[in-house]
Image (cartoon, rainbow, N blue to C red; front, side):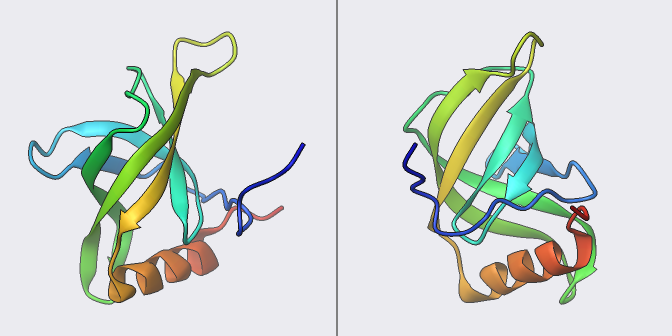
Length: 114
């Protein structure tokens, strides 16, 4: 199968919370991340091809930030096997250079060893 992804998905040691910026409500937990996007696991289905303004809550201060803001589009949502959870892939639409740098640091410092 043809793989569209430019960068390998990276699993972290933590399932970090991802919140909607406007409400502060958690929409899911981080499953994996790249500098192009991320995948969340959630209890509720997330609509495909919808734009979101999101906050990723960091496990500790990175460059004096406890969270990063970005805009992303939901690409695909599907049920996670036999569980009651959903997996949703997101593509970054608008993320600043500083935030991308923090994503890279997050991967380097907290990636789950293979």
